[in-house]
Length: 235
Image 1 (cartoon, rainbow, N blue to C red):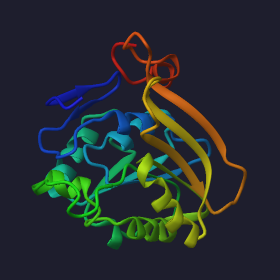
Image 2 (cartoon, one colour; image 1 turned 60 degrees about the horizontal axis):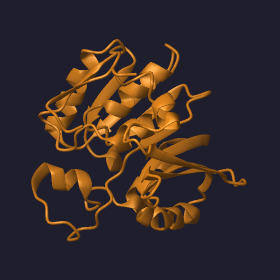
Image 3 (spheres, one colour; image 1 turned 120 degrees about the vertical axis):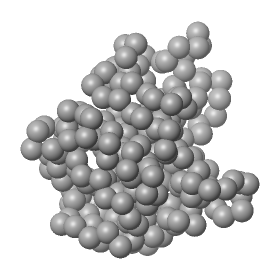
């Protein structure tokens, strides 16, 4: 998915100025995130604007979406992608750090967060910034969520499975609990490598499911194809 432009059924993502391109992780989170009842949505680290645009497509016209992006070039491109979409009046892109972002509370926050600790991966520049936690640690992310989420609001994330325990430990300390977990495998023969999480301040029995992205014939599995049918052109 790392081409210059990426076309979906109802919008287009230009991504030549963004370090992190359209990815399966982003599409998965955008298609999966529970949106029922949400009226104010915050997308932390919007990158190309993908999540904000997918959630705009999935929600009623009265839902407002704010998208925050640290990198100036990516923020500018996300703003252009929004402007070129059918939902320009519903999405606002803000360039800056989420640590200092201020707004009225949101009832849904989504994030495809950075996950490599400093030094784990040899990378430089904007791509390193987008992928490494030195610009947004899990503690800082959860602190922003705690500050910006309504008391009964929800947080939706996609994470590498290896980093789930780290994030959940920090979330527990701040009073957040996992309510839904989807364990994601790239194919049936592979181990779980991604997890979709929905957290809130309400402790409950976790609704847990498993999903495989690719079927045995190399195409998308039925559940993934159905979930993303409203977005991919060839569906």
